[in-house]
Length: 247
Image (tube, rainbow, N blue to C red; front, side, top):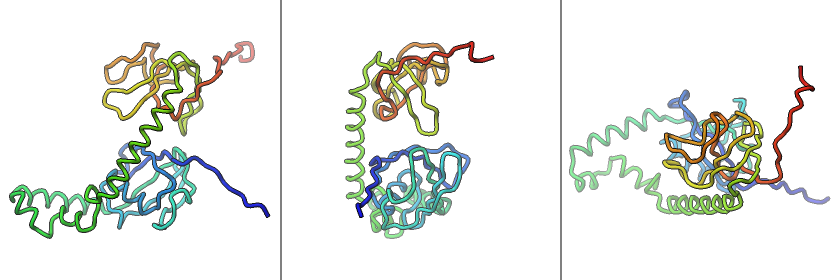
């Protein structure tokens, strides 16, 4: 019998929420499917402030339906049915971690840096002993290299998107929209490169400006800025709508 190989993209874009403040807006992040669940949890430490050793992860689809628990630290992230646009909900004792951090900060304020460094019961010493967060040099280096690679990959995608070209924008959990590319480059205060587009219909979020800075000009609600990975350049003419077909 021939073996069957399932080929999927190497990265997933997911939304992160946490139990400490379930009403807050989610944080979107991109992760490699080839990392283990434990490595994934370690990365989530920096995003959520939780602890990889105690956090529990639950997956929800874009309609907020529960999909599964991510509970095998040795398994690969890609072995779970997680697709672009899904939500990872992190459950942890954030209040206890926060209290520990705040009490530690108060004590540190009373001590000199040298005295604080010598103590063995501080948050810093705990993180150092367990190689968590910024004190995990190997993990921080891996994260830095991954972020650099993601920026390089994004730059390659952006190179193929020329201003004036026709395109389709496919953002997870949103309908496909046709547009014309109006801008390609960085946005003030935002990470990486962005593609500014003018949609064929008023299904955008702005008029070509963001936070008071203008990058291009178009009618209100026709403009938008998206990451290059969501933009496909090609022969996408404006769709015509025959008014006689609708009453």
